[in-house]
Length: 234
Image 1 (tube, one colour):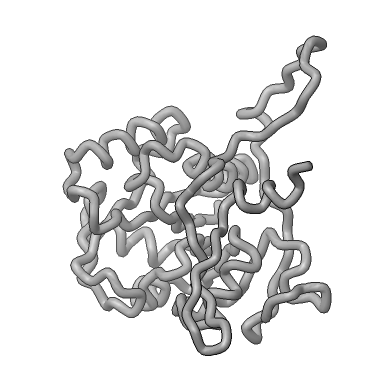
Image 2 (image 1 turned 90 degrees about the vertical axis):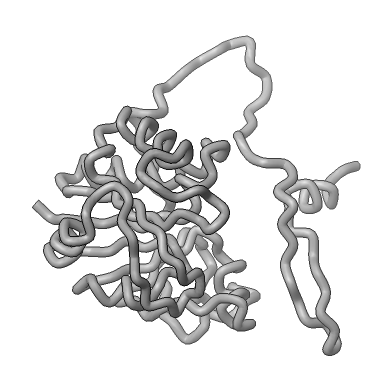
């Protein structure tokens, strides 16, 4: 049985983001259905009270318990918030020695945390970065806003990333495209003949701005669904 550690970003620290949690969960459940042993690795954000009995940790563990992952949660904190931090890493749900044993026998680190510590990546013998922010991630990397540690493989959900159709750089990396997985068992088919419209679940306003340099001046661009959809309002 292959062992895969999924390194997520800002799930336990963002309990109100239900959709955010489900993005990573699809990968965890899919890999488990494929016969893998799956662990969930995540660093608690600095703003969150840290400790094994805090509200954020307890809420996260209760949610993953529904899917049988509570014993495979590897939550940690670090006094060093920078991407190049060497630790030390304090594990909150397992002992440090147990975490290290898991890392040593892991076949693959599937990493969604772009600014993960290189010291943590180095603990795994094979690593893959997963880009779920196509275009934005490459922009952040190319402009130096993100320092992404080296990985063995680079996956992306973006169809044009790394191709001649892309309007943004590939950062000198070979990007492997694959569509986001969906665990169909968790999305049962439902039919309502009275429904006339199809929609999705998403945040209309995230307060997110993208920093760009135009003519030597730093500017911020509104990067929300609201701003994008307004272009098509008649």
